[in-house]
Image (tube, rainbow, N blue to C red):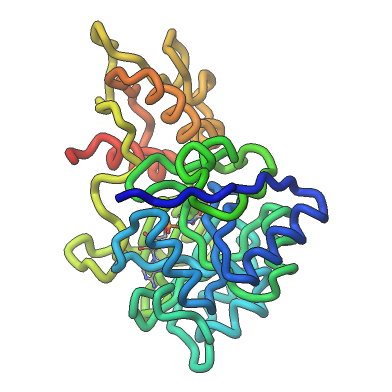
Length: 317
Ligand code: TXA
Ligand code: MG
């Protein structure tokens, strides 16, 4: 399919750049913007045509719903039915790398394409100042998946976004690399008990500390419990071999902890640093078009989200 290319504006995080990005979003265009987790591909969540553009541009399966980004708790409460667990989580971790799934409220105004027809909506208040200024300027919810072609490695810099979506979207708002580096943790709060729908930038232990109860893992048999979690995802062009304790001839290596590697997620074994480096290092190694051997990463704290993304990158496709 041949697609006509458009000129993708490069905007920076100064007031004029943010105002321009907000004006484009309000006019129904697609704008990529930074959050503390990854860059998002934004569209006005109330504009069905604009939201349809996200699916078309990413090549995203239409059953995979989107997160509505809002400037503050008050804006979230206009969209979803709030409850005590949501209040506790928002008070402790918003703004931040946490998405809450709650029942839609009547009069929410969000396009059904955002929820892919579900009765619930995923909402998040991002922490990055540039994102919050943008949401303030838009004055309404912005639907945004990660700003990468569907199934590919998520973007943590404006250059990653341009490599994947340049020529297809109106603008990219650039405010440097993302500090957290993996997507938000998604917490389902629409039922009686909280459910971890996707591990991410906020460790499950921190959620349990706030709620004072264990958080159930999602039911992997139930596609509606986390509709977008296709196994093969975040996929580099090259093959990925996990838990590699040595490097085979012809492989490039991605390390964790001390040792000699082509790139290291964190030489000191710091999981925060590793999360921040994950997608950037995968992009960089992928450019070499050789199989990637990945050292073991401990399955604790942010390591759960890192290993989740690595398993998807390694999954058969
Ligand atoms: O950090 C992030 O969350 C980034 C930045 C841009 O905010 N966004 C992001 O969006 O990762 P995306 O579209 O790549 O992932 C959203 C996930 C999908 O797995 C989707 O299925 C799930 O959220 N989701 C959205 N709405 C849902 C709902 N109502 N119920 C269950 N899962 C939902
Ligand atoms: Mg994504």
